[in-house]
Image (cartoon, rainbow, N blue to C red; front, side):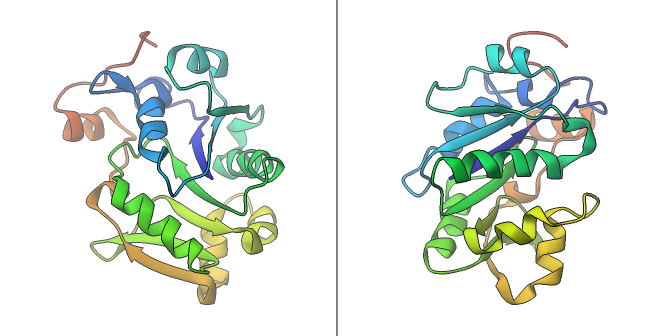
Amino acid sequence: MAILLAAGEGRRIGGPKALLSASGESFLARACARFSRAAVDGIVAVLGHDGPLVAAQAGVSSTVRLVQNPRYREGMLGSMLAGLDAAEALGAGAVLIHPVDHPAVDGPTIDAVAGALRSGAVVAVPVHGGRRGHPGGFARRSWSTLRAAPPGRGARAVLADHPEWVVHVPGGPGCREGVDTPEDYHRLFGSPPVWHGVSP
């Protein structure tokens, strides 16, 4: 199951990154489309800042489970845990956690992470150019450790404290390409930031 993290305020770029536009669709809808794969059994999207607006404007399928994280200002770990709780309630045995501000992740990268989990990896992470990217895959065995992670370290704590769990898989360049600023958006899409449906 995929957990898409879409709760942030997008302060550095000027609005919720879940509603940034990529080729006519929101970042959140784009991520949902990318993760709608045979290897991924369901999608949970965690909303926070302007959650009702994002839910109304993002254009995601009704099959996507939307979860509101009221404590989104406390950092990404809280959204991960809200998504993890929803995925566990839905019977997931493993999750792929992906931030919505990485819109260029490709299908083969997603499939590689999911495949490593199916093959028995406790944690699976894509690597491109010698650096880790997204999504991170976490089997149920790792969830208690993820829940106990310090807020300032989050999922990185699991990777650092349990290197024996981590399997690295090849990732495309998009696994490393995050959008935090207008400059990042321009680099990927060739224009100033554009929002889907509404202007923030």
